[in-house]
Length: 225
Image 1 (tube, rainbow, N blue to C red):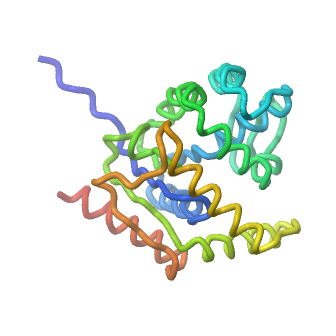
Image 2: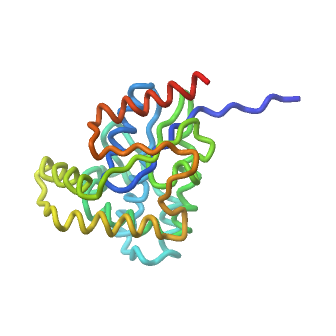
Image 3: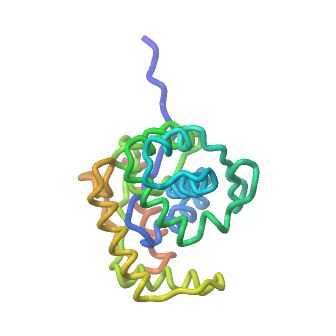
C-alpha cells in the first residue's frame, strides 16, 4: 500500500481587522523559514481589480470570474496586479473596506480557495486571515485566533496610517472596525470565528515580540508531541 502524502505544515492565524495577525504571521514565518500567505491581500486585490474593471463590489456574479482569474504576484514587499505595482492601493483603507465587502460573497471565496491552498509548499506555511483554520486549512498543525480590544485595534490602525503620512480619525476608525467585525462575523460564507481547536491569543496588552514568541512557543510544543 502506498503511504499517504505528507503535506507541508501550516500555522493558521485568524482574527479580526487590525488585530496584528499580519505582522505576527510574517514574523513567525521569517523565524521558521516558512512561506507566508496574507489571504486578506487577495480579497483586497479582488476589490481593487473590480474597481479597475468598473464592477460594483455588490455584484457577486461579476466578481466571481475576477477572483478566479486574478493575475497577481507577490515579490518581496511589492504586490503586482496585472503586471502593475499596486502595493499602496492594496494597503489603503478603501481597499480594506472593499475586501470586507467582497468577502461576503460565496462565489468570490470559492474563486480564491484553490489559489490560497496553492501557497502550501515545503517547508511550510504561515497563513493569516478570517477562515484559514475553519475553511482553507482545517488540518493546520497549529491554529491561533488572534484578537484584541476594538479600541486597541483602532489605535494601532491610526498609528499605522499616520506613520504612512495618511490622514486618520480615531472615532471613524473605531466605528469602521466595529462595523467590519459585525460584517465578518455575520456573513453566511465562512464567517470569522474561532474554531474549537484554535488557541485564543489576546494581544490587547501584548507587544508584537511577545505575541510572536507565544505563537512560536505553541508551535514548538505541538511539533514535539
